Image 1: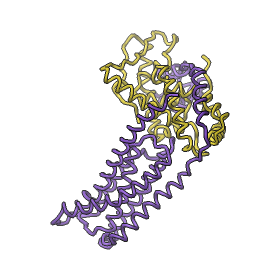
Image 2: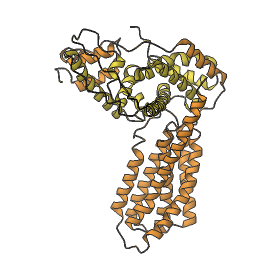
Image 3: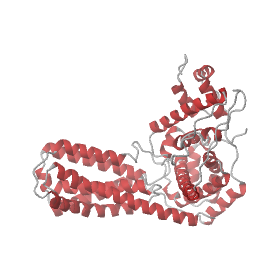
Image 4: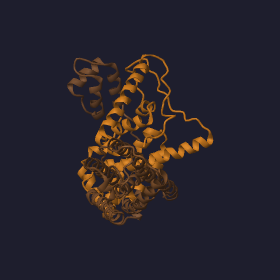
Length: 274
Length: 203
């Protein structure tokens, strides 16, 4: 509803921040007089909620249990330190891969292809690294939903690949592809293990989500190694066998996260009783 | 009704100092943190469950988890989103456990219906009755806004989403509640069945 002063939608912001003991701003108060829905909503919220609190003895129990196990802890290093560690691991794995596999892929790419694919990979690595680092501590700020980011990155890479590469005649699509997939995984798995070591320093509350993101991140490192080393520029080869590394690693991370989640919940059930 | 002050009414700097002292194993800081944060955390659970025994268990579980991961709090970060993210995870686990138990018992999760009032001036439904008709993700946002006094930005941190997404959920919840409240005060018309019975806990 639109009154002379403000709309119900504008009123939502007022309701969200309004505490019952405060007076409404003048424009909002005028709107409330005219709009029955908003008036009832403000009244219902001002009506309050139960003021009951937890029993005192329960709080004492909690305090006692914590004090019993109270030892100094060293706070987690800053996000910047972890971000740097993730990026250094990524660069190290790609450098080792380039040394061992050579740079035939890099040389085979045209300038446009090189710029597009490596810009997309670099941006993806940075975005996923930031997302994973923020998932290491509860309450981290996310500018992109961590649930959507891995899907968005994969979609973006598929789109970029489809735009800059063409279909070429291939005689050994599956054998060549499997070799690339194996190579990609060979570099992704060590990267994933190192990521796991870093992640274990934090508190991952949603292991499936973080596992999928970290797995996808490790997959990106494998793809970067392949783009530098593999001279096959066939569109389908890159879409299926190169980008497939990301998908496989993300699924692997998700499965590992699900297993961690399962065992953690079982252990919490056993330990949470005071 | 006398409501205790929201934790957000306390300066964040004070919570930050308490957390830093907690990390240094100061028992006094533990006592103050548990006393100040527990009532709101308890309401966060109770408002969405309507079951006080479960709320107490979840409160205890939350503090045990907070204790286990206290090293992940970084000085300078807001304390409330950090605490509520852990509390939310406890609630998700508890919801799953209850869901599994309910599926085994083949039970039907009945949620309270909003009582009807013919007179606007008569008592409106309690907060718990009101939010019970909302889908889980909207109920969670409204509870954190109105019961726990968190800001949209803080809720976005807790739910690992963006401020825009939280704002949208709050807007949808208010729209729905406006319609339900209008209907409830106008006549004995039945309210639509709550969606939350069939929806999972938002992650």
